[in-house]
Length: 312
Ligand code: BDR
Ligand code: CA
Image 1 (cartoon, rainbow, N blue to C red):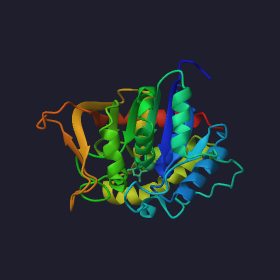
Image 2: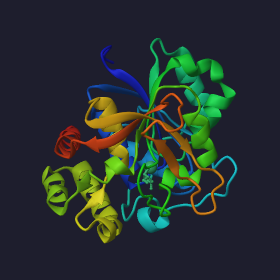
Image 3: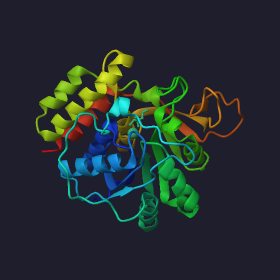
Image 4: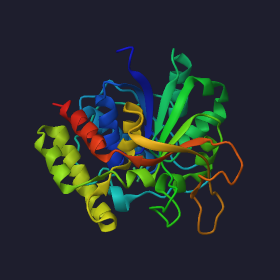
C-alpha cells in the first residue's frame, strides 16, 4: 500500500469494457482499488460476478475483494446487452474457472463498510447501471461525507446507444441514476459524448496484442469482439467506454468537463433513460455534475497500453 494512492471502489458489470476498466484501475500506481462490486447490467448477476472473479484470478489480482450486489434494477426488469457483450458477458473469452469467492455479504453492505472504515474519503467509479450506488445512498446517507466523488460512465448529452435517446447504463436503471444525480455529491459524468471519441482501432488492438503476455492477448481478443458491434456504428474501431471513467480518476483532466445541471428522464414515452443536460442554465438551477465533453484520446490509449504492460 502506498499512502499517495487514491482509494477507489469500482462498481461494474463485466462486460468487455468493464474488464479493461478493472485491469486499468488495478495496474495504476495512482489508485488503490479497495474493492470491486458487481451489479446486473450487461449480463445477469451470476454471470458478471463469475466474469469478475475469473478475470481477477487470471490476472493475478485475487487479493482484490469482490462483492455481488443487485440482480435487477430498482423498479424495472433487467434487460441485458448480450448483442454487444455476448451470452457470457465477456464475448468469446474462455477464462478458466476459479476458486476465488465473493465477500459473504451484499455489495451495498460491503461498500458501506469500506467507506465507514476508510481514513480518507473514497472515490466511487460506477461503470454500470446505478442500482447498487443508489441503494447505498438511500440506506446510508450518513456515509456521503466518506465519498470523495463519483466519476461514472453513463448517460449522454447527445444521442443514445440503446435507444436514440438513451445510453445503456442510464436506460437500464434510470430511477437509480436519478437518486445519484440528486444526491448532492460531487459527480463527473463520462458519457457517450466522450467515449465515442475514444475509439480503439484495429492498429491499436494489434499494438496491444504485440505487448505479449496473456492479459494483453485477452484484452486484444475482448476488443476484437467489441469491434464487431462497434464498427457497424462507428466505422473505425469500438468505443472503450468504461476505462475512460477510470482514466479520468487516474489522470484528472484527461476528460475535459463543463459544469451543468443533469437529470434523467424516468417516464418519457420515447425518451426514458435520457440524461437531460442543461449546459445553458435555462433551468436556473445550480450545476450538479461536471459533464465530460472531450477526451485526450491518444493519451487515454497510452494509459491503457502502459497499464497492460504491468501484467506478466
Ligand atoms: C455502457 O454500457 C455497457 O454496455 C458498457 O459496459 C458501458 O458501461 C456503454 O453504454
Ligand atoms: Ca459497464
